[in-house]
Image (tube, rainbow, N blue to C red; front, side, top):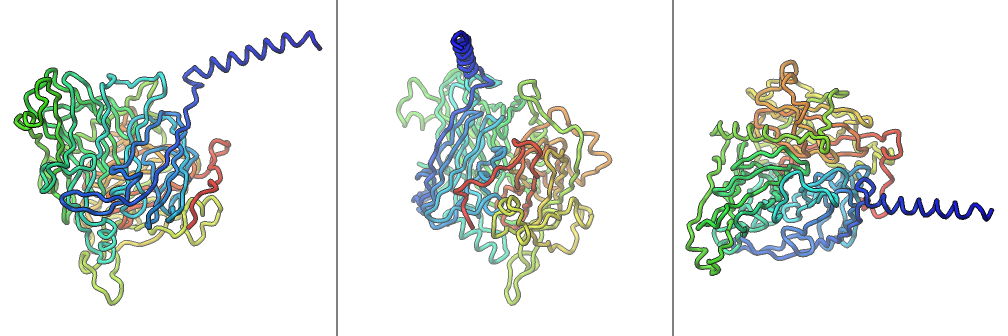
Length: 585
């Protein structure tokens, strides 16, 4: 036996050195495990001369940055110190086999109750760029939100010039009153909600509002440098135009997917969307400062916060160190499209042209895996409608009814227990049904003269898909109570926008123009007012996945539904059991 030992030890040494070497090779390099604690607590904030107690994470507004690399495992312990029920959604994270960590209340989990905690545990797979985290219950995300910054794997670089500096820019909405009171009143009366009092850049309204001259976001830059701006729209109910005076922006990524770079002076970003843009500063310090503006793109009827938030792009001048000399410099202002798109057709056209500029890289390293064939086709109509007013009460919605919103005329009712738990345990009876219609029950001229009957049905319905089904979904806006743009967000997936257009989708003519080569890959996409988009994806992630309009008022009114994706045959294609600390209803 002794004669075999030298051979054994040399083999062990060889294996050991192989594993050491392998660990340094990119394909073997395992990610780190990153730990965060999010304490949900009350926090007094003053904006527009108005102080109110908001919900925040770790006393920060906007909330703290969650930073990780592609391939890292992330564990975030969320501890609820407030009286509200809480959940957090990691918006755009694929959550492969980690559906229990997705976060929408009553879909994948029951809320975290007062005094309780839950640890969200997921691994970032095949994603890099900017996403966001936000509360996913009622309207709490108005102040509970922050950036997710996903860096490339170690020793991997960006497919664009390395920026001198990276700056998150979070667009939001500020309410002088508690947004929970706003949505509560709207649901009670059936009317549209009161609008916000200001828009914000990194939590600051800026100098165009009364009593806000000091609450201004300042982007201080050096000449001749390239800055990566990580732009996030965390507003509750508004798509926003964004522009920086006298500076061009180069789009390089959207929703944590690299894009073919393109230049633009004006961006449109919908709630839930993220866009990375390169800002190249002027070669020498100009004797000027420049406004950074954001204001709404409005396609619907009703009331609107038609204000504008402003920040300031300020060059670091070698000779102007004093505040007074900065103030003396001329201030340039960008021109943004008119707010009300219903009166200006060219605004709608501009938005469509901008949407078509977003293209996947579609390279060997960053392929666009667009489904070329389709197993299941769906046609969903989206839009507003009404629901009956309770007996012996008066409602302030259209024709004395309550506002509602629906997909295929079904307004989704949130269950009182989490759908994912019901699905996993095989106890869906009484929680949801799986008969969500694949197309509208009644066909009509979707973008023409609206029908007289506006009432919607109310139910908790889902679509069931076998594992790895290739799906094509056409999302069609309707003109019932007015055509309106809807930023649709699909949880658990990215999808490819293979087509878009205005009017009614034509299943015989429109597919001929689909882009199946390098379409934009996103998790949130705007369905145009009076138009449609066609998306494709592979249902390769088992679980229950929420899909909803990211205008929170439309979600509250029921413009939402759920997809149930069944387990696949392999162990890595199945949803594991729930974690032991999963909150109970």
